[in-house]
Each structure stands twice: as C-alpha cells, then as structure tokens.
Length: 355
Image (tube, rainbow, N blue to C red):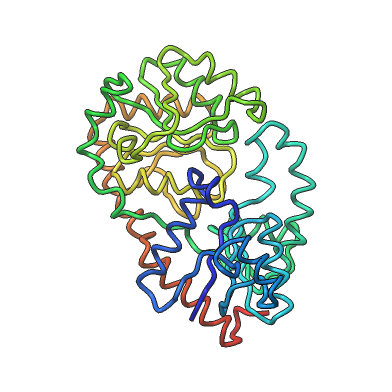
C-alpha cells in the first residue's frame, strides 16, 4: 500500500502544530505495512512535476491513496487529481474557521470566507480525518458532505525522553526560579495569551511561554502588545531548539486556549508528567477529566485559585502529573499508526469508510 502523505508548505509549517501532527503521522506509519511518500509530484518536486508534464509522463507521482494535511492550491490540485483518477482521498482537518480566528492579524475577518471554502474543500474527500469528536461536530455544522472520522493526533512519548535532564540548563538560560507556570507553542491570542499575562500580573509566580511569535505586520495587535511589553514575571522565549527543555523547565502547564481541535502540546506536557491547567472548553471534555489528570477552569479567578492550589500542594501536582502520563500513553503513536492504516485499507478495499 503506497500512500502519499502530503503537507503543503512543509518547510514553513515545521514549527507549527500541523507540522508536528504530520511528523507524528509519518512516524506512526513507519511501523506498519504502509509505504509512505511525502511528495505527490513526479520527481519529488514541483519542477519535477512541470518536467513530467512537458515530457508527457504526467505531473504526479505513483501512489494508491492520497492523504492531504493542508488546504492550499497544492492540496487542491492533489484532490482534483485523486477525484479524477479514482484514487481514494483523505483530507485531514487540522484547520477550521474556529481555530483560525484569533491567530494572525485579520484572521477574524477571514474566518467566515474560510468556513465556506473548507465546506467545499473537505467535501471533496472520500474521508475527512480530524483530531476529535468536537472537530467532527464543527465540520458537520458547516456542513461538510463527506464521512468524518476522528483520529487522535497522538503524542510521541519517546521523543520527549530526557526532558528532566534539561531542566537546570533551560531554567538558567531564561532565568526561571520557583514554580514556573508555562505554555508551549506559537503565541496567539486564541491560545489564551491575554489570560496568561493577566494571571501573571495577579500572582507572584514565574511565567514562561516557550515558542515563536510574530513581530511583523502579520502579528496581531494583542500579540505585539504583550510580547513587546510583557509583565515583569513573564518570559517569551521565542523558538527553542529542544522542546524537551521547555517541558523540563516548567512545572505547571497552563493552557487557557479559547478554541482547539485537540492540543498536541497538552499531551506532550502530560507525557512529561506535568500538572496541567486547562480552560474548560468542549474539546477537552472527551480527553481529560478535572481533578484526575488536569484542572479545568472557566474564569480568571478559577485559574488563579488553581495555580495557588498547585503551588501549595506539591502532592497534588505529582498526582495529577502521574495520572496525566497515563492519559498520554492512551494516545501513543502505535495506536495512531494502527488506526490510520486501518482507514487506508478500508478505503482501498471500497469498505464503509469510503463514499
């Protein structure tokens, strides 16, 4: 079974959650019978596709099934090719209008047109994969005219091994001390940036956000405001070369996100046995349980109380962290690989997953 697992703009997305999710798909599939190719183009590149077209060999590589992870013109071209050559097509919904809003400058205005485009684009699939039941409900509301199958993005637990050994190095590098409240990933207002910073202003803990942020014209005014003039106890690290250092340095993972399709960094924090504090939004209901593997909050006062409780009770931090590790293990890449290969086999055999 030869599958094209394609990520358009792969070089630009390598620091994103989408890039991480696709890397994990490919690592998960490495232990299955699936042969993965990462480029749909003849010769492995767009110039090769042009050359193939000019010489009559065709623009596309040879594959049995196409799995696209983005929504741009390259992905649309692959979808068109698959539709017209009876090649099963999987489109992976890493992007919704709901989680696009609150990211870049102007993203809120573009959310409605994006929703209309996504309804058209995802409806071209034989199967739409998405990270959660929540995302499935969102896509059904558009409505997307294709079967939709939730499959966890998973977490690469092995890749995080050794995070403890990097604790002192990263705490020294960013001058962190005491109980460190932290986040990991791109800095967006949608991920709860203002709540993160307001909580820092209202407490005495050290706060650190490990991840890149935009400072150019595409940056939202909110991101520019907080990263340019952060509270005294907030550190924005920018890109870090080893994500294990972030999970080693931090103590309480704070994620007051407003919208999410799953949240890979949450699973990574859990895999590193960190106490996790989340905003109580629908997507987290299907994965995490308040008081067992995390604490969930709705208001800023509740977030503040949760941080104080964790600061005063190291045993609670440890218990939540150990339970969180068990939750992360339920999302291991072995399970992701098994589920993806099962979906592929079903589509290729004309089974119930296909249209």
